[in-house]
Image (tube, rainbow, N blue to C red; front, side, top):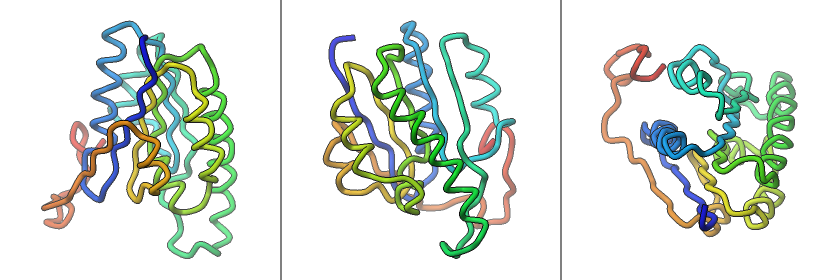
Length: 174
C-alpha cells in the first residue's frame, strides 16, 4: 500500500454500492484485508453479502434496520439511530485500525443526510486514517465529504425499472 485513497460514490442513480463492490473485488484480488460496514440496509441475504462473506479477508457487518421512516420524529427512528450509532463506532475503529487495507462504508452518505450519524467525527477519522483505501457510498453526500475525497463520482438516474413496475431481482438489485 503506497498511499491513502478516498473514493466517494453518490447521486440519485443506481450503481453506487455496485461500483464500491467492484472495487472490493479488486482489493481482494490483490490480497487486501477488507472491512465493510453498511448503514441503513438490513438485508443480509443479498448477493454481495452472500458472495463476499465467503472470503476470510472480508469482515462485514450491517448496522441498519431497513427503510427509514419518512417522518424524522417517528418513534421508529430511534431504533435506526441506535443501529447507526453502533455502526458509526465500528467505522471510526476500522478507519483508525492498521488491520484493514480497504474500508467500505456503504450508505454512509444517506445516514449522514438523515442525521442519524455525525459528520465531523467521520471527516476527522478519514483525514487521520493511515494509508488505506476508503470507499464511501450513498446519496446526498455532504460537501465536506466531497472535499475530503480524492475521487467523487455522481450516479445520475435516467431511467429505472422500478418506475416501470419491475420488482427487485436477485442478481440485479439483490
